[in-house]
Length: 289
Length: 283
Image 1: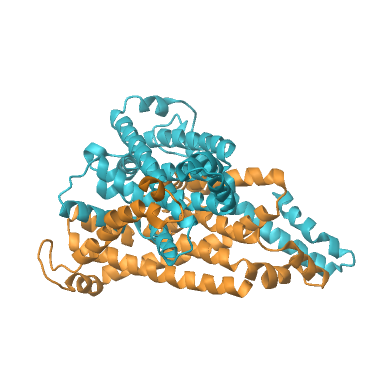
Image 2: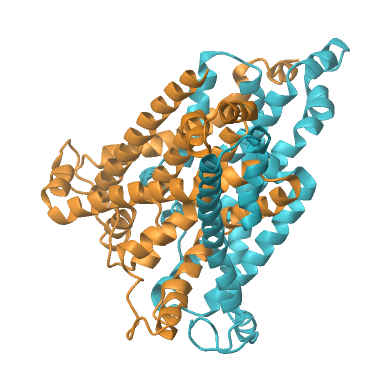
């Protein structure tokens, strides 16, 4: 990625007509250090994903790398693994309901938060965002203790409830960002023209903040689908979720089928990401906000 | 009429459902957890600091706490050193490169953490990439042990947290006025001096929020330490799991959780105060 290093030159170049060799050396060393580290980091960032993809097509019986040959045997072995599929179905169900609840609760709360400058907004914001930074494992253990205290048995319902808490920050963050960008004038115009608040929401506000809501929902879905720390305490053998299944596959006996299911997950994440970029401009929210 | 009034965004009522939900299923459970950490034993009423005493008396537990904090600091610093240049290159990249870079940064972020950890198992394992490579070069005879070590965990965690450091720094860099760097250059400031005196200080808010996220998530993460550490190296989250699920020692697990919560909260509050100061300084 030497072109990455040369890109920096262009931003500083114009003022450099009378440059001595010392400043040129300075610039060159800067470009090489920054470009070198960035290249290394990008390689490191991409490597594990690529390695898993390659390893999943291995013809060997163990996880040796590089693989001695290629075959689809591990993908075919997935067909005969009912526990994995039932875990995947549970994960989809939980992620779907958790995302739906997050969107309903999150968009309503965002509307209230964006329209007000009162002191409670800052407190609410801290409350909603805190699950991002606080240890999920403590939250999970707390919920397990709480549910057993009030006598609720673990089920898909308790699992969904816990995932809503973990995923709500994503929806509120992107929806609030969209609402703040939108401002109040269009909503006020709609009200002045005689539209009721419900009509205004569905015909003016929602279409304009759609991208933020969709991006937040996508992030919420993925983080529910990927969650382990909370599910560790709240999913049992009847409601086993996919990441827990995979974790025990890898942790206990390094089951090579884990490579195939990982390969499937990587490919579907990549495709989903490209699709979401087209639909809602995913990177706009993740990279700039 | 009443429903319509509820729907007026200017009123706070619309935030009420979420506020009630979070208090019921998040604030109260955390309070319950805290309360149960003050139990002498599971189910025994009364207030006692016994669980905390037990934690701080045992040197094994203290080592776990120390290792966890050390891992957090190590991974945060590694992410900062490796992530800042990526953010810098990204911010200065021309449009067509930005798309590819975005994909490279976001794909690992969105890919499941179990999958990424699994990738490191394949890389660091006995028959993995690193060992095969070193053996083929003739540098080592026997495969070296990388899995089940603290360094293995730190390397894998660094890669997994890297996007969380890059994104806030990119956001900060995009707000730096490019004319400032140009002014510095035309006044004779070299590339390094311009970077350290102008660009880096102006991106401190992004650096601080990146560090905050990476530290908080590293010391709380479970999958990577449990798979790469493999029970040989223990961290606070793995200790909590072991105590709660394997040994069924609820009150002690609650006390360990409370200590971990306290560490994370202290760092989050400290760093966000620093972040606010740095933001005020920039304005």
